[in-house]
Image (cartoon, rainbow, N blue to C red; front, side, top):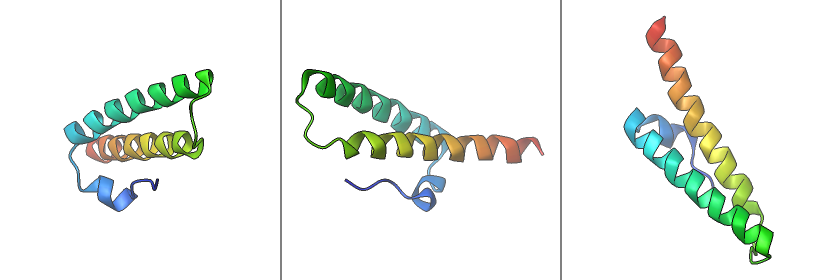
Length: 69
């Protein structure tokens, strides 16, 4: 499972990014639950999702900061 590239994310608008953040957070919650009950096979998926969420949040915040300048 590979993460999403920053260049790919910067081509999306903020609404799409917010939607993907919500979807990734839901997936992350499901993976955390699987981890607790011992059904998670690939623990790296959690790290990839966390990084993707951080990248998406960075794109949104950089747009907001450049818009205020």
